[in-house]
Amino acid sequence: MFDSGSASGVLDGVPDHEQPATLQEHHAHIAREQFREIHALTTLYLTRCEEDARRGKNEAHQGEFAHVEVASILHITERSAAALIDLGCDLRWRLHLVSAAFASGTLDLTRTRAIADALANVSDDKLAEIERRLLEGGERLSTTKLKQRARRLIARLDPEGVRRRRERAEEDRDVRTHASDDGMSTLEGLLPSVGAQRLSMRLREMSLQVCAEDPRTHAQRRADALIALADGTDHLPCACGHEHCTARNGQPRSDETARDHTGSAGVPSTSAPQQPKATILVGISATTLLGLDDLPGDLYGYGAIDADLARDIAADGTWKQVLTLADKDRERLIEHLLDELRAAAPELFDETTETDGPWVSSRRIVTNPHGPILGVGKALRAAGITPPNICNRTKTSREALNYQPSKRLAEIIRTRDGTCRFPNCTARAQDCDLDHTIPFDHTNPADGGLTVEQNLACLCRKHHRLKTEGYWTVAQLGSGLLRWTDPHGSITVTQPNGPFTDPDDEHNHDHHDTADDLALRDLAYSNSGRTVENDLAYLLDSHVPPGTRHPRPRIPAGPILVIDLDEPPPF
Image (cartoon, rainbow, N blue to C red; front, side, top):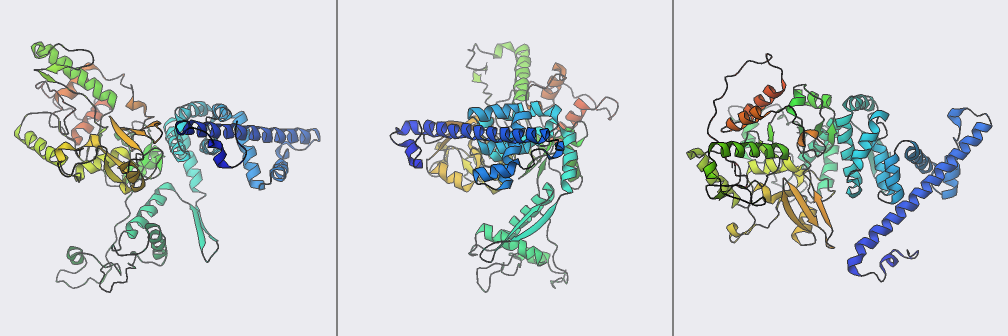
């Protein structure tokens, strides 16, 4: 079935429309053969263990030279042979679901190794559930995405184990240099995730201190920035060669910055200006901050971290509140609002079909959801026909016709997405472009894709160009979901990957057994003019036992609010 000659022989004579399926089947065939090889190596190892046992050899040393034999047979290093045997033992005795997927060709060797490494230290009582949930849809994920998802699941389902393993792993931190060819050296290290992200962001900040004429690539500037830090300097000199470049010696670029570095009389300060600390971003649930649960946090650029580490970072950090609304909560809220309106004014409702949605006073109430991020820093206000709200809507409408998103909207999109939204890309949202899914019409903005949340997504520059040039197409499905179609017609749906959009979070599904109708009505009635602080207070009231907080007077029932989720925020 498969040509053993050149790689191009796999597709010889195959019609264009069948080539993707042929390549997939060929890849699955290779994966099945790799499984058979590893299974055979493991059998050889067990045979040698049995032989050593019959000789009376200590159990701890049985089969200790099997990897040397395997390395000689396959002409690979002994280290590689030992790793293959270890993987085979894991597949045979621990990772039964992964083993079945590997044997069927659903997973290849690279992804199987990634999963085995990620689950190496998971306790046996948690392993089966984590393995099952990790493999749900995992056949379409890259190794990086699989590792991120594994860390998130482990942090959620085994938080105490994650904390203990992190504390043990931090004892192995180290940095080393190794000589390489052509006068270069390799730097490698194992650092705590928070410190590593702080270093990464500091190098990025320093690499951006140069002017636009600097000839170095971004990667080269990061490397030079690390050397500059080692030399004791806190800036990266510009290499443009221009005599009057203000960034050449790390000097400030603007008069305003220069004034900050002088005394009150304009005399230069004798002390060097203090450089700001590198910024790292961590997402954490308010309930976790309050100690009500141990849900994992999310460290930008790394992924899930245990609750204790997230709280430690928050203790010294600058807080910014993010208001979220999961799809289940949104549906329940709208349902209760409409039920209340039907009971109070049934004459406003028109006859409708199941697929048409409700009509109120000859106006259809559209409930197409936005993404889960309602606001950053302060909440988006709820409906209400008042002059300030009308002014806000007018401002939002104007922003929708501008190509450049507002700072508020850009922050919402980056917080929602977390990374580039192309399948399996892990570029951080802060480094991505904000792409209009439906292209913006610069000639007549009203006719093109609007600058609104439902039409924006984070794309790294490479995948932004790939989409713009038409190699792949993309469509927004609502709730922040993107549907990608490759040149052969295969479809992949990507989800937001921000710290507040965890698809494995049970709180984002049906986890509302304690919320009664009265609490939902209170939320609906008091929603007008809410801020994030109000919503956090509501969250406290919902979870903290009575008597532990000062009582607040009950907000009287106000008018029924109808929310049109098809309109841009603030609705």
